[in-house]
Amino acid sequence: MIIQKESQHNFKIILPESDNELKIRILDDESECNSQIRDLNNELSVLKNNYADLEKLYEDLQKRKDQDMETLQLYLTNLEKKLRRKRN
Image (cartoon, rainbow, N blue to C red; front, side, top):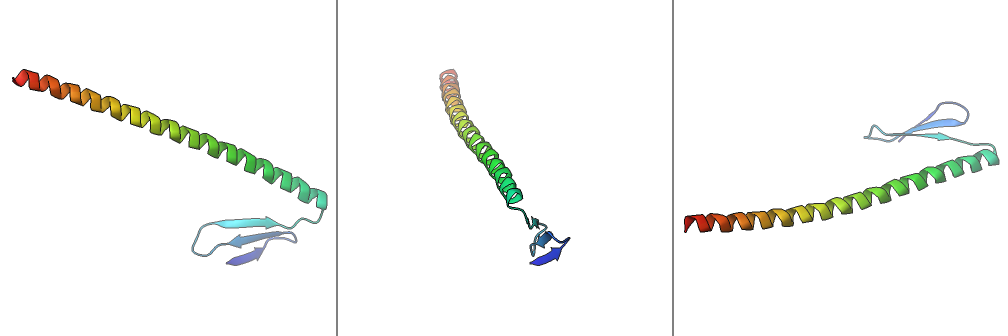
């Protein structure tokens, strides 16, 4: 891990074997810290809601896929029956 000091309060952490970097700002003021915490909590809340929406969408898509597979299986079964009747 590489830690670079960018200014008095700002640091950049570069993770090894990765293109990822993390920027950290050291806050002096308690109200600034509280504001940052509120902002981060709001962002986390949005991410949780987005994740829940994605989970619901995935479940809906799974159900749709299952229904489509059942419909396709029914269609193929009926088609197979028709072909047998034509052969006989």
